[in-house]
Image 1 (cartoon, rainbow, N blue to C red):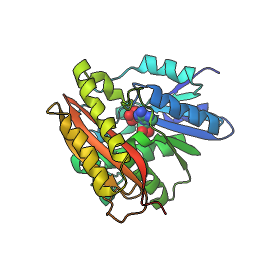
Image 2 (cartoon, rainbow, N blue to C red):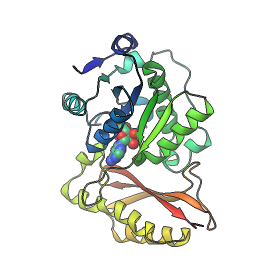
Image 3 (cartoon, rainbow, N blue to C red):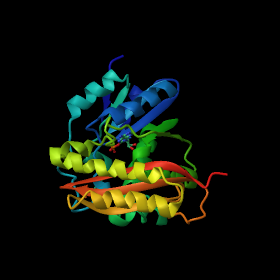
Length: 278
Ligand code: AMP
């Protein structure tokens, strides 16, 4: 099957076939992590739509919107190789009219942890994801655990707004040395890349401990030892459903999440662990 590139709702309607549709929303610069999402979509649905859109709404004024990597031709090759059926690649001017007023609020959960450092980010993410859901009308959508708070907020939006869409979370794909794949890794110099390994190392050190206090301390120690090349925004041990910090007595799944600047690049990573198992 030829890969179809759709720019508009009309193009999407024309490309739609009978059967189930899975959507994989991305900002392009596709890597092995995105590939794994497309593969999961392929297994689960009759038609796979990959959206490629660098969403201006989710970038702050001092963030990297204009220099975010854009590699559309290579992305099409990836989508073709992974058996996607449609690439939805709208223009920002078509998606966002100049007189638009209404958007999605991520609520309190959008203002904690990652949201505390990126005001408005999750409102922008949820607004574009809801628009993509309405345009593509998928039966299911696949998101990476790499962006754990984003995944949790999308599940929240689906529940709170009664969206008839199944959300699949996909595990984080890593380099052999532990670095989580990210479109932003291409900004890293060789030295930066070495320093960046402290993020996944810290998460592993935390995950090897048992209590919240020990987990936080062990991860913090690794980040502190990494030296001045890394500037940590947060290290958080949170309830995966609410992103509220967990107490010492918390039992069940928790997410240990970190964000840090390495050189000029901001990186995030997280692991899931189980606290106080019965
Ligand atoms: P992005 O293009 O960075 O907006 O990411 C698009 C989707 O790919 C999101 O659902 C991400 O969570 C997911 N993703 C990004 N990096 C990875 C990774 N290393 N492993 C798995 N999924 C990822």
